[in-house]
Length: 294
Length: 269
View 1 (cartoon, one colour):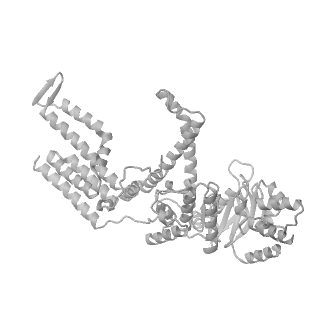
View 2: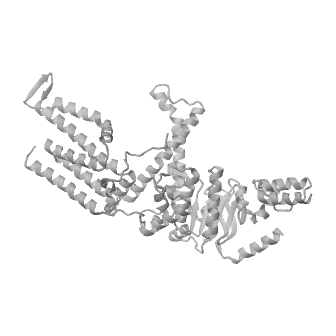
C-alpha cells in the first residue's frame, strides 16, 4: 500500500522540471588521488525537499559547494536553475538563485547588527535601498526574529543566529537553499526549529531545499533521500525506501532511524509489522493496530 | 563575562548630535581639532571648551564619561606639563634650582599645553561617544570614496574594520573557552615572572590563531556564497544622506573656526 503511494508521489515529482542537474559531476582536491565527488548524476526537482546523507568525508559538503560555485568541477557539468557556471557573472547569478546556509552560525555573519547582516546579500546584489528595507522586514518576519533586528549577533543563541543566516539568504529571493549541516552545532530544540523553518519555506514559499545532514531523524522527514559515500551516490529514493533496510544503510557508515531498527528487531521476534516504519508516529499506529487484533 | 561587552565607548542616545550623519561629525571634529591647534590663547580655549560643553549637554552625555576617557592620557598630560614647566626658557624666573627653573612663561606654556591636550581628547571623545563604531566606519568609507580613483581601498578598509568589530566578541569568547580548557588541563596562567607568564600564553594563543584562520576561511566562503564581490555594484540598505541638521552643524563648526582665526589675528588672548 505504501509502495503504491510512493509511486504516485514519484510520478508527480517526475512531471516537475529539474532545478538542479548534475552530469558526471566530479571534483578532486588538489594533490589528492581520489575524487571527493565522483561522477555524480543527479536531478533535483523544483519544489522538492531532498536530504543528502553521508558520513564525514563522503563528499556531501563538496557537492554542496559545487552547487554554489564556491568550487569549480574538475569534470562534468552542473546546472542550477538552467544556469551553468561558465563565467564569473554566471557564478554570481547562480549564487543569487541558490542560497547556502553553513554549519557554523558564527562564521557566516558579517555585520555587527542583525538587520545589517540580513541586508548584506541584497546589498551585494545591488538592490535599491527601499527594496532592501522591505526585503529585510519580510525575511526577519518570516524567520520570526523581528524583535532582534537591532541586536548584536554575539548576543544571540546558535539557533537564533542560524535563523538570521536563513533570513539573509531568503532576502536574496533564491529558488534553492542548500543547508550544509546547518543544525549540527545546535541543541536539539534549535535543530528542530531550523528544520521546521526549512520545511515551512519549502511548503509556503515553494523553495527547493537540499538538506545535507547526518541526522537520520531529519532525513526521515524529507521527500527524497540521497545517500552518498566515497563521493558517489549510493542510494536514492524516498525516505521509506532508503531506511527500510537498516543493514544496507549501515554499510555506508550511517545508522538507520531508531524506529526502523526497532521495527527490524520486533520483526525478528516474530511480530507482524508492516514494512517501511521510520517515524515514532508510524510505529505507534502500527503497534496500536497489532494491539487491537489481540 | 561577555553578556554586555561594548566595543569602543559608544554611548547610545537619540539626541540631535547622535542622529547627525557620521561624516558631519567626523568633519566637525576635524574643525574642532584645527581650531585647537591654531589657537594661541586661553580665550580661544575657553570658547572651544564652552562649545564642547554645550555639545556634551545636547548629546546628554554626563561629564563622568568624558573624565573617565581622560584617565589614560593623564600621565602624558602630567609629563608635558612638568617638561614645559621646568624647561621653558624665559627671563622672568620665579624659582631657580640648578639647571631647572620655573618661569612665568613656563607656567603659561605648561598650562597651555595641558589644556590643549585635554581639549583635543575631549573633542575626539565627543565623536566616539555619540557615534557607534559601525557608523564611524560607514562615514569614513564614504569620506574616502573620492580617493578610490587614486587607488585608495576605501571599501575594503571599511569592510575589514566592520568584520574586525564583528569578530572581537567572538574571539574574546573563544579565548575564554580556550583558557578554561587549558586550565582544566593544568595550565597555569597566573603565577611566575613575566617570562614564565608569557610562555604560558603560548598554549592559549596557538589554538586561538588556528581558530581565527579557520574562521576567516569559512567567513570568506560564506561571503562569497552571498554574492560578495567587492565594493563595485554594491548598494546600501541605509545610504548616508546629509540633512538640514548636518548643514547647520557644518555652519556652526565653520563659524567656530572663523571666530578662533579672528581672535588670533586680533591677538586677543
